[in-house]
Length: 82
Image (cartoon, rainbow, N blue to C red; front, side, top):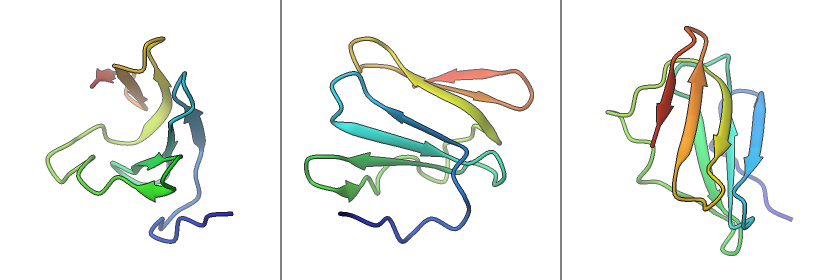
């Protein structure tokens, strides 16, 4: 079991990468709220997203089939691909 204690709001979306090595959690109730969790190591990535990463209020998230790209949709209908 692992708890992610540095979240400050409820998650509205969870999505595993296709190979299940990364779990993505997002909250549509807090601006720029997104966390990437390394599953084998059970640790939160601290280097992304950073303070310059802007996706506003994420409403949906998904990975590309090869886990190389991450799409984050927001309440304005925009999709950012990382």
